[in-house]
Length: 316
Image (cartoon, rainbow, N blue to C red):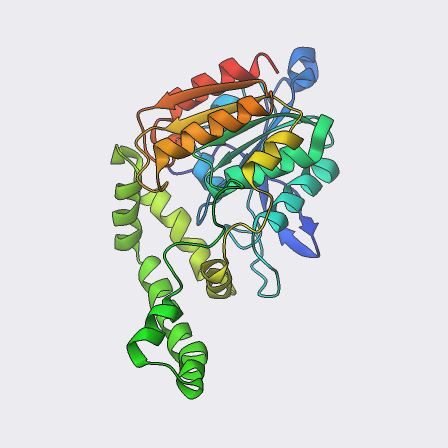
């Protein structure tokens, strides 16, 4: 597949920075009252991805719902300013503002991985304006978990190697650590490394094609991409509310779609159990579906994901 079946939207800004988004809707929307009354669907990508990652979902979902997909600030075709604090709070606010200013209707927010956390946080913040939240292998943490990122900062490891001392710490902070980050960044955006990484993330690598690889590589060439990588790389966690607290704030139905063989989520089965437990504790209307896929089921097994989402959307 070489193109995504959606049109770029007019320019929209958040905090003064340009945000890229696309949308798609049925050609006969003006004559279809049921279509107009359905909630809008907003798709939010994961780390390093973009609107292009929804290539197989937008065409099907837009048959019954107006669909939007957005590039989070720092990713895709959106701007990548160096002065922002990247994390869950920034992206939550971006999504909430987009729904209120651009969509202006009740919206189901769908998110994968990092975008899943942002989707949940935005859905909770929107309260009655949220028509539902769909999480695909969502990232995030719970109140009883540490926010500290894993693995430990490379700077801490380097300090052990070169020993302690103020002057050496400064060398690490201002020279060695940034150099290592740059080397990691340059390596990660090589096409063969992207392909290799995706083949670890997808259980069935059929859809790991040139289009997908280029959709991840191209944004890494944008001015500011390395600075964003540095900030996200150094950030400790998503800097937002824990998932159990967000569940307490959420007023909308919840659909949990899991790629059940996810190699990226640490303690994936335990994470699934905790999502289920705290959703029930919050008395949410929740449905959970396990799929034979990896971390990005919407792109790996899109037919199954589209079927589950469309069935669930009928009730929203």
